[in-house]
Length: 318
Image 1: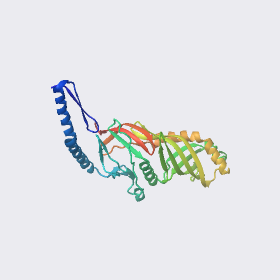
Image 2: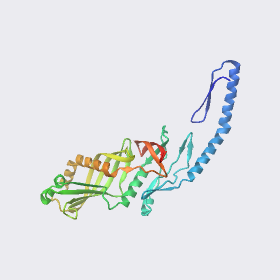
Image 3: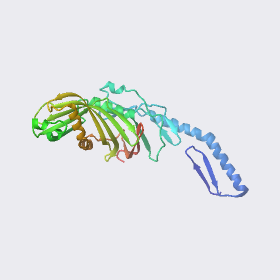
Image 4: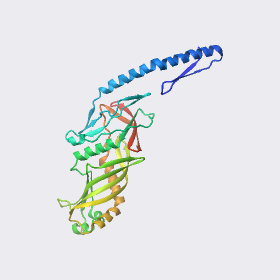
């Protein structure tokens, strides 16, 4: 029989390339075309439905809540599972919550309504603003009394922002701390994200138990998410704006609020460098292994309203 080439495209259509001329070739081509049309019309839809049923049965066995360290991940479906050509599309809320804090489970739910084209990776994961904001809300609620950033520097450095602190307390180590509030909000755009973080800012001087300065500080950060070796999620702050609100404690300076804000802006570049160094050392989030499965070959891309992760998976120990 002459060589024949069958090609099945993503829509399961058949095309035939027969290197035969004349009546016999035409007859053979008609036979193959009839067989292809028959398979497409009667056999493939049944196979597709059966595959879909099997995949749904398998996914139904996966728990809707997965424990990740001290937290839980709600994988409740946001829409029915879809089998699009050769890809399986699962749209879940991906809500990170703590069972000890019921308020972390009460976030209004929404999920992505549309998805870009699939790549050659085994998997694509779309982290929406909802998923990231719910995770931030849960983490900051659970750790509401802990500083996200705590850094030791000299009073001479702080004196730029709080004129007079070095003269009053001498050249000593001082600890600056930042405690973001659960109301922190993350907005995702092409190539970057904007984090609005209402926070409490503290300054403590070595040898003194209580803060010598504290204020409400609304930070607006421009940052880029990335994946480090490990693997672990991280971020790089590229810009920030700080708006000082209510002064809670002030034993450090007699300067007016305008001078404090001006000093903060003067230190902006140094603060960005300090924050990035601290994030790299302490805040990077290790990507967990879930149910014995680890993510590999991870690529991260910023999009409007979501972050796209392309990755493959391996079983632990392979």
